[in-house]
Length: 104
Image (cartoon, rainbow, N blue to C red; front, side, top):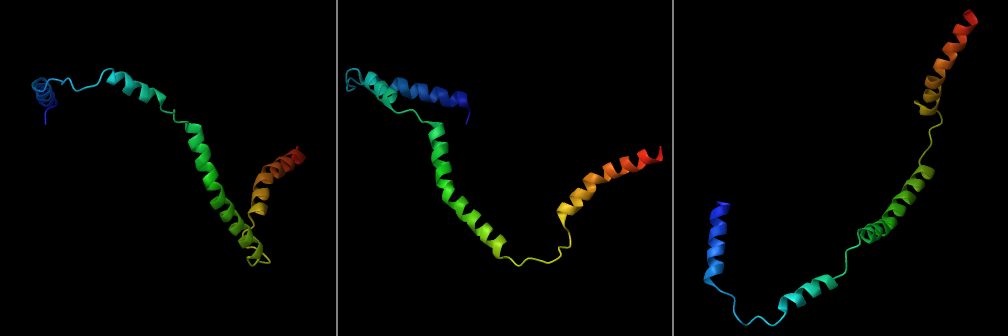
């Protein structure tokens, strides 16, 4: 539907029904005062409440992972020891620098 046609129809309907005298005195002031009296939503409080609710599941997951890591069968010789691979990679440049210094 075209917005201009809708606007015209709504304005025509509003003009056809004039406001009645049944509206109490200062009604709009009471409505506005009620809106102003409503508490303001505190976004930080909502975040804090959500985070505190998430504590229990996170602790449960952490305890399950700790138990799994403690009681999981350990391999005697891991096939890919990432710590050793990382150390060899990082120290490879140092080893190359030392070998080139001795050539001079």
